[in-house]
Structures are given as C-alpha cells and as structure tokens.
Length: 243
Image (tube, rainbow, N blue to C red; front, side, top):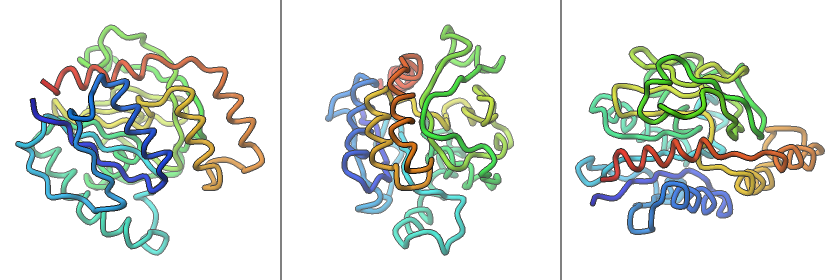
C-alpha cells in the first residue's frame, strides 16, 4: 500500500505535531501510512505522484493572499514550489485533501482571488451541504448541516472555474469544493476536535485571529462544542484513496 504524503507548514511544534497526530487518529492511519514533510523546515519536496496514494496539504499561519513584503523568505520559497505542485495535482486529478491553508494555496494556484471578507475567528461554525454535496462520496449520508472547527483570516472569493461547491457557512460561502473527481479543498478543519482546537488557540493567540484579551473566552466557547462529523469526512477520504 502506498503512503499518503502529508505536507505541513506549521513552524510551531505543538501545532504541527497536533495536526499530524490528529490526521493519524481520525484517518485511522499508522505512522507507516504517512510520509510527513514539514515544508517550513525542509522545503517542498519533488513529488512523484506514483509514489503516493494521496496527498494531504495541512493548514497553518501563512496567508498566501498577503503581499510578498509581508511574507518570510521561507514562505515565498515554499509557495514558489507549492503553486505549480497544486496546479499539477488539479490537472492530473490526483487524490488530494487540502485543508485551510491548503485550500488557499490551491485557490491562488488556480488564479482565483483570495479575500479577507470571509474570515472566521477560531471556533465552531455551522456548515450546510449544497445539492452537489449531498451526492459527493465523502459527504453522502452525513447530516446536511453540522458543526466544524474553523479559524482563518482569508478564503477563496469563489469556487475556481470547473469546481463543484460542496459546503458553505454563513460567513464563508466557498467552504468546501471539489476539483475534478479527486481533489478536495476545505476551509474548515476536519482533523480538529475540541482538544485540538484549544491547542491551536493557545499557539496562535498572538497572531490577530481575535483580540488577545479574548483568548480565554474563545477557549470557553470551544469547550462547549461536540465535533464529530468533520472527522468522518477525513476518514472517508482515507478509506477511498489509501487502498
């Protein structure tokens, strides 16, 4: 069985390790099933698609919609390779699961505007399926409305040409879409439960997702949630492609 390639861009160890461990846990994967690459440390590898059953692109604090002067050299160098990689993934319809930053860099690669108008502070939001979402193999049979963890400053202004909208929230209409048959992108975090989100809030509380003095209030709101459906979407992706 070929491994899944996991591309991570989180410089902070607690957040990076938490993302990796959650993908293993909720994807039903072992460490031998995943080739983990911390892009912010070693750069974007040369990817031979035949070596992997699927590709997961994780989230992180980078904002691909920022002007170059606000990006670190590491981010700029990484995105110079990520953008053509994402274009190739779409062109070849390679199984891909692009989460949060993953959706944003995919959007940028397809020359679609990234907007700050659809930002959502860290916490849970209501997601609703489109009619196409009801029929998608990763979503079929799940509740048509469910709660999921989010936290992002920017998002796709629209679904890229040729894409299929699957999920929307009140404040972020293009929350999950599919390109072709096998490329999935989502602004929410299907790997995040309450404990995982509490770690993220602590790690990123200084980055302007919310006023710093509201950190404990945001955590308390998260503690009241019970998130389960998004993890099933991750598990379905793994089960469908990691064979």
